[in-house]
Image (cartoon, rainbow, N blue to C red; front, side, top):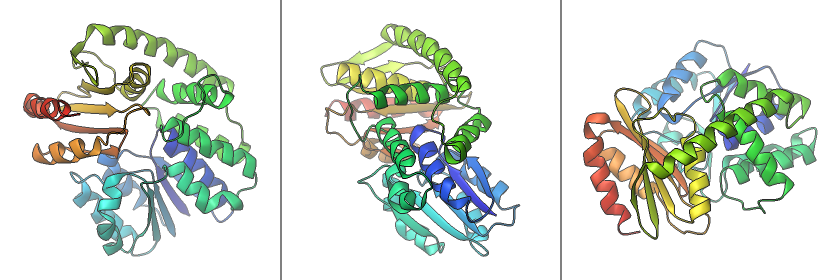
Length: 320
C-alpha cells in the first residue's frame, strides 16, 4: 500500500490527484488530508498501516509540532520510502532535518506543489492534457499564476475552490473529489456545484461583515478582526478576495477555538512582499506555530498572548 497525505486546499488537492493517478498503477493508495499543525496525528494513523511508500504533499514543516511529526516519520521510514514534496519556506529551511530522517525531499520556492508534482508525474499520467489543466488550477488557486478574471480557468478555480471551502472540515469530501479527478478525470460534478453555490452565499455575507470589522487601514495594509465570528474555513478566501480587490496586504484575525488565535495574511499579486518573515519570527516568539509562502501564510498563538502578538504584527506592518 502507498499512503498519500496532502493539504486540503486547491493546490494540495490538485497535486494529490496528479500523483494519485500515477501511484494507483503501482498499488492501492490510502489518501488522507492534513494541516501542518496536525500532521503528527495523521502520521500516527498512517503508522498503523503496512505501507511501502509515503508521499507528504503541500504540507509545510511546522516548528511547533515538528518533534511529534518527526517521531512518526522516523518510525514509518524504517519500512517505507518517504517523499516530502512542498513549496513552503519552512520546508526549504528545514531540508537537512528532512534528510536526517532519511526522507527524499523535493522542495522549491519557485513553484507551487501542483506544479512540482506535475513536473515529477505528468508524463506518467494517463491523460496529460487533463492533469496539466489540473496543475494550472492549483497554480491559480495558490496565487502563483495570474489569469484573466473572465477566463474559463479563473471561473473553474472560483467554483472548485468554493466547493471545497463550503464545509471546510469535510475531509471525506475532499478525498472524494481528489479521487474523482485522479480516476474519472471529471473536474466538476453536481454536488460540487451545489456546495459552491452555498459557499458563495456565505462568502458574500462575510465580505459585507468585513467592512464593519476593519481595525486598521492605510494605503498599503488592511487588518480585519473576526474574533467574535465563526469564519473557520472561509478566512483564506475572504482575505484573498479583499487583497486582490483592494490591492492591499490583508491580515485577518480570528479564533478557531477557545484557546487559540490565528493571524492569516494574504498579499495581492501586485505587491512584492514576503509575509513568511513575519509569520516565522512572531510565531516562534510567542510559542505558536505557522507557515505558508510569501503571498499566503498564517500563524496561531495562545489567545492569552494574542494582543501582544498583534501589537508586534502591527509594528511590522507599519514598515510595509
